[in-house]
Length: 226
Image (cartoon, rainbow, N blue to C red; front, side):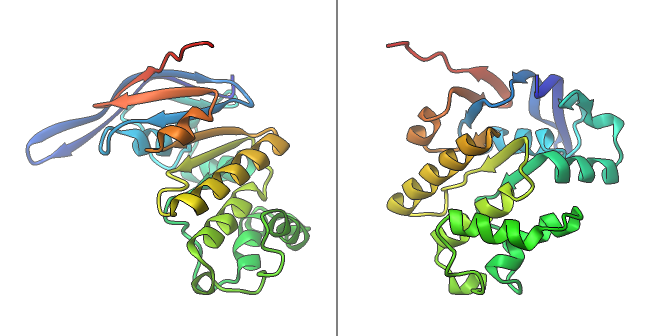
């Protein structure tokens, strides 16, 4: 089991009392699976993704990544685990404006101490169709091109797990479909486990499993077998 949660909960204290963002969640995801998490805005999807990636801390319960319990790690150890095993793609791209496409992709590998970061970054950018745009800055790239840079950046450490939060949410339909195809193609080539949050029913259907979040409760969507 690559990803596992037991009785995972998230609560926040507000002026009006305690808000239960996530009800107790038990989840198991195998290596190589593609999983979509769907549900209305505010249902807890992105919170769950942040907990699975170790970007946020649960109120109670456990997250295990590759048999390592995240609650046993301090922030520095969680950061190392993310660098070694996890890639993340955000809806808003989150590229660094002052760095070129090449430098944005290289950055995680350089921080992780990889010696061939530039070569890896060049190869990945060529693979996503941006071999001629290496020296362009984010503001010189279209939204679709920026998301392709973000995909290349997420794959540079050859992560075991790729988390994607609305990866096509800020793109038009045509560009979104191209980015989807690229995401699944690279996922298949790398053998990475893909867990994505999406509002796009068509994108969710491309995944092997679909999980629905409703008011902090997670259920598996049973699909008809043709």
